[in-house]
Length: 472
Image: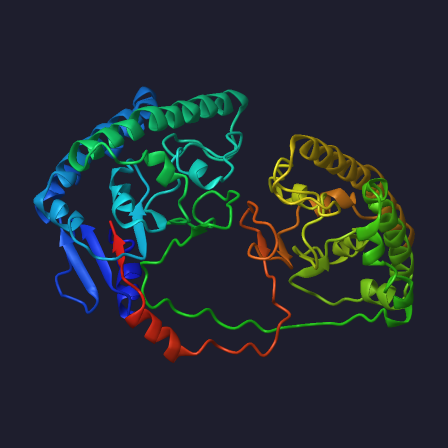
């Protein structure tokens, strides 16, 4: 609760009516903040887990879901049967949003049945094995360890097998034991007309997680799972401003070769065969760009210079020949993508590309594809990835060696060590997809002179239109 207390207090300070159901009422009342206190029931779930005991035995790690189930059952029974909670459930208040903990039980989502409001989840720990599925977030057990085990993201084969089996067991146990147990308790106290909890769970809108990839293990997250580790830290000190050293290497005299050569209307109207082979046109364009760009005297003078830099920022699109310059300066590489990610870009960041719902950006599919469309999308994606890796990168390396010398390693070594990618996309406009922490959507970064929304109207809507919010 202490982790998310600043969130609740901030919502109240912004003018929202916040109702918090918890065993930790505020000592000093805050305007717009209402406590539904369960303080008398707090002993049932506080200081009940001996972490040292759990960390010793492997068998105990497998069965910790059973222990969490017993704790959840006791908590649900005591809270749902309490006079305080029953009184709240009988109120006729209107609620715009419910924020609930996603941990070892979902019995408190009975509030959704009552108030019919959207659900936002909060997690004070790393994601539980059963939490990702409700938001369609990928959990690849080859490198994403079960948080109830003691693995890192570097597992041996048998550790991966164990991690997979334990994760499957925990998911099965939660769905078919804990959720049904929760439903039984809800119907016991609020009638048999209650909907199945899974209907509410799978319609969760957002999840806020008390983690950060710099401290916990990095993993791909869909846009509606947001890491907010450190939200409880007040008044952080600002970082010192860096000294910028920016240098512009002009290729203006060579730009006519690769500017305005693509007719997008012609591509959109093309038949399917032409869409499959758009990569051939991109390959020819890249070939010209590399030859003229790397043969430029300005580029040669820059490579031979003694200048020092901290970072190289370059476009990730249809060519990687300019990675040859990275050998000279031996600094981290940040990629930029002015379009949605190309089929071959995700692999260099180990970002998942599930072709059942992530369409190839050279095709004309949405994320709702029929079986045959998924099959075509998969085959075209494999073709584009293969062609890029075994033809285009090989040719880029030949051109780079031709103009920059043969002293550098394979381009693929530089490409796979890229540190960050900024993508000109946003899930609200392009299709949402899971992204690892070092792929950041920056759609709209080019828009200048943004006008702030009027504060007065927002404050009025908060005070007079919103019904309120419940946090439990």
